[in-house]
Amino acid sequence: MNGMSYTAVAFFVAIVGLTLVITWWASKRTSSASDFYTAGGGLTGWQNGLAIAGDYLSAASFLGIAGSVALFGFDGFFFSLGYLVAYLVVLYIVAEPLRNLGRFTLADMITARFDQAKVRGTAALSTITIVLFYMIAQLVGAGALIQLLLGIDYWVAVLLVGFMMTIYVLFGGMTATSWVQIIKACLLMLGTVIISFLVLQKFDFSIAKMFTDMASATEHGEAYLNPGLRYSQGLDTISMMIALVLGTAGLPHILMRFFTVKDAQTARSSVIWATWIVGIFYILTIFLGFGAAAFVGKDKIVAANAAGNMAAPLLAEALGGDILFSFVCAVAFATILAVVAGLVLSGASALSHDIYGQIIKKGKVTEKEQVLAARIGSITISIISIVLALGAQTLNVAFLVSLAFCIAASANLPVIIYTIYWKRFNTTGAVTAMLTGLISALVLVAVSPNVWGPEGKAIFVGEPLIMLTNPALISVPLGFIGGWIGTLLSKETDEAKYREVDVKANTGISVQDVSH
Amino acid sequence: MGNQQKNIDYDKIAQLDSFKQLVKKKNSFVWTLAIIFLIAYMTLPLLTSYTKILHAKAIGDITWVWIYAAGLFIMTWSLAHLYVAKASTFDKEAKAIIQEYERGNN
Image 1 (tube, rainbow over the protein chains, first blue to last red):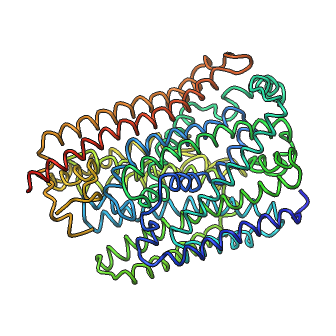
Image 2 (spheres, rainbow over the protein chains, first blue to last red):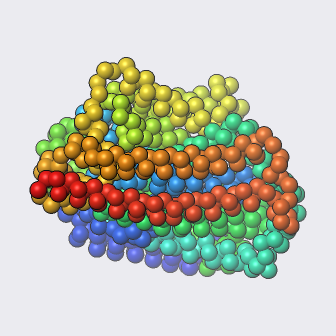
Image 3 (cartoon, rainbow over the protein chains, first blue to last red):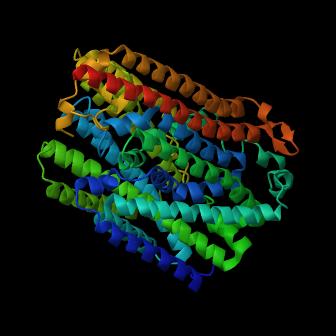
């Protein structure tokens, strides 16, 4: 990499220009709160499916998994499996009831049953916590990547991404965010398919030959094709796999996408679209990873970035020269922008709709005030995350992402499942489920090997109290147990309300037209 | 949110036999399959962490762990489509329930 070429500049400018045109177009279609948060609920199945893929496939997927597969063979592919199977949890358990019960936020869905400020406030707190961790991860990753690609300073890179995401959300709301995500998904698939094709060509289009060659292409020999290079602790692997598969169904920016379609049927078809796109992408991560290991080589990958994040761009350079390298870097940039825009929007919805509109103003806000609050909320979330990201440059990105998944699985999933499926569940249980999940995930990470370890390996020098790098194995059950104990401690029940929620979730009756 | 919801008598719908049956069918379908796919998924890290049986070669130099992983991809796509097929039959029943409720109201 010799800094920026003209080709790269052209691709970056094209992406920035295209997304700004979309934002300008979307801004004319954004007048109500529903436009701002949910694009008026008017997206079709394929549009929302592509947008879910664009929202979900972060730089951690594209750059991170390609790098992990390149360096650790099968162990890197564990992420791809977890992130994909997670969509079954979303589709089977969460998507339809969420669409049928909610309006803008996860808290809307839970308060459809427990209409109390403390429930909404706790849900908003958990949403904002997850959004901030996820966002810092994306921004820190983006800063490091762009710094590497363009040769500009880290803080300039973070400000650039932060500025762009704020513009999209502020002016174009969910409409702009969705179309940025749709275009990004298409670009990412295009780039990945091109690289994979070139990799396969090198192996004479034979998968069998590819595996045979890979068994001797790296320093690991045949062990490269088997698990164990990276994850040798059984419980740690299992715990991480739990966080990956259950976390997606609790990620606020993914859940929010289900409010952009008109009914449960469209929500369903959008998950099918997303599952195919995301699945094909994750299969292609094998070609990206293997290709990088074979044609770039471990030494060069690690020299560019110790975690392997530069594997995919370097592979593009090795196979397709400067043009493909520039294109892939621009795709990585678009990938980051699409994900952080979605995060800003979901953070703003919790701050402006839940905390300001519903708790402080008790729902007594005009349409105009709601949109203004949403815009102020977006700027607030953007500024907080930019400031945190500027101070978090040295934190490990993969750790922050896995923490976000772990909190989502521990704090949000139990309360979602209980709200829909458990008749006896009550207000106290909803609050204790969320708080137990949230606090236990945070505390367990704070005493984990990510934070405490030998010098240079963690944030502080010392002995960790638990050996799990991702505490989902403990914190997810704690979230469920917390909700269960909280429920039993309170005598309150709400059977009539539960019947209403049950009817709505299963028939979609308040969403569909009822002739009266 | 609003006015139209207040007019719906949720208790009445919840009491309908057809509704109770739908919920029962739906829940047993959803949770049976959810348990199946979660077990299929979690079996992989259990096998890779505590045994070496997936390290053996299956086809050429491709080891069983990749075959298992490919199986999980196929499972995900198949079960996603199965869900949609099943859900559209539930939709018809839900529609019939709403009609039954509306007839009862007129």
